[in-house]
Image 1 (tube, helix red, strand yellow):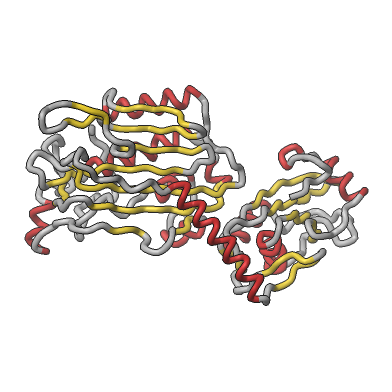
Image 2 (cartoon, helix red, strand yellow; image 1 turned 90 degrees about the horizontal axis):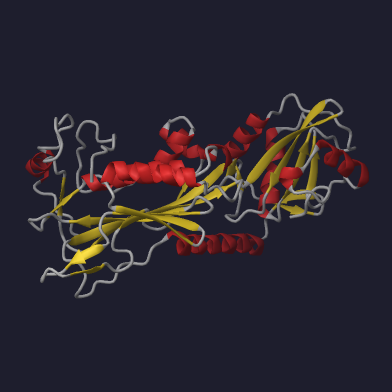
Length: 409
């Protein structure tokens, strides 16, 4: 997309906007002027059209004749709220304010969307043609947008899905399955991974406090990989060897804030039960590591996320909570398995599952309205790292199951 006055978005000054208006500021394929009195529905029509085409700019507080009227009714908060409430999926956009002739204007930068079609809350789909925005009625054009979305899904899959583990004769016999998870972020600022060594050291201290020295943090390309627990496996004759790639609990954080990871489900000495505490502990630890390593204002630049979850069962097992290393059992874990068996006759996991079954779930700010929770960094991370399988097998949760207990691994 073209730049205003040949300046990068973050480098724009009020003088650049004034020069643009004086020299070549006309409404065209990439630029639209709107007054402060513009109706939300008409403003959303233009944003939807830009997102479905090649992106563009809306100068809010500038009249059609390029006179500077300024904004009083429209605020940055209102712009954000209206876009998120009126267009599905939410487009990638940024908002900046400038002072011209002692009046405040806003410029909304809309990127070409990667997840079209973008639809208004009135069920309309627009595209940019010349200096105007028009509804799309041609089935061929709609098919093009759908193909573009399909290509995005394929790119997301190749980005955050992990290859299934290959089961060979040397595969560890105590591994009953694994949980794969991940999310691909769409943000207004592409690079959100903080590479400050102080933050890396802080993350290392956090992991060490949970599982001693049994972890690794390493950089591979443009991502950090955090691995928990042993990477060695012991064979029947007592000899040790390195585990195959992917056969461990780990988290990978990419430079754009996207994530993929795996949690191994290993049985205990009786070769039937699988302790579920490590799932909750790993998810909680990973969430805290992520919060340490990404930028502090992720909630300000977050647009949406495609979230992925999958359970792969290799051997049948009984999930339970090992309470031997915890003190007071305030949540009823000690009798959890027995209570479940008494009510439902058993708790054997025999097959794999995937949430969702057909497509990725889309997380955006409307998700918070659905869950009736405040939109904040803490709640955003909690939703991104929540997992449908952390209490696998059980139907009636004990008191406080929503609080992921953090104990030593």
